[in-house]
Image (cartoon, rainbow, N blue to C red; front, side):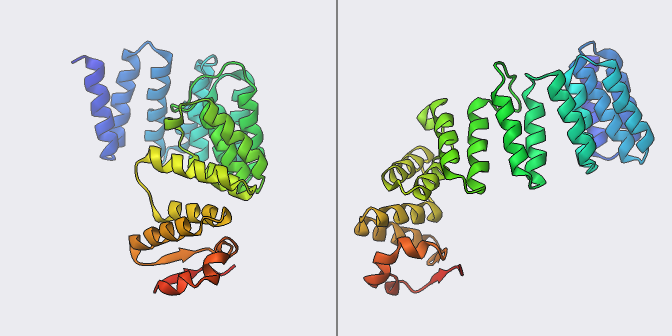
Length: 283
């Protein structure tokens, strides 16, 4: 085993054991043994975190500043610093750094993902949407954390759904689906919810059937959603059967107040009186 691998493993071990001084010294040795800019950046970032962990905040900031000044052509230098700022809840500084990174390296997807996630956590969904849309405007994008365009479209669909813009959500989810194999699409349940919101029950049922088929298993929440769509379609027997199956998971049903409209036919025919434990959420 090479000297570099031996020392880097030891450094991570000491770091996990909270022996930060030993870890820092080993990371410093590893830095000298590597010529790859991205590897050096990651090592120096770990050194900075070691300093932070022992309370040397000034030295921590100095290392991150050194990373950015020494590797001006490497987007990773901006990314590691911005993630540090986010951990410290210095959100304004982190946003400024990420936006600067996007301007300098517009094809680097990770900037968009981190900034969009930060804005989403800050409950600024509108700004998060605009960041993801600007990522999709780029002709070339690197992959970030294994995420590509189909995943960005899906995240946009989720953000639009939470804002109540169901038509935009539906359009985004359809674009995501078009970019992957049907069996690899992970958002059929959200797609079905969109179809229900725009009163396209036929496609809602198809989406849920695909979700069950490709997932290979089913849960109570999915069955309740399917039953809602079937009730709207007038498929009362099918809806009853799926609700009974949902009930069997926990010998109870928990239904949202606004589900009552869809389940009106079952309320009228007395279906719910045959089940002992049915709880309706207050509207």
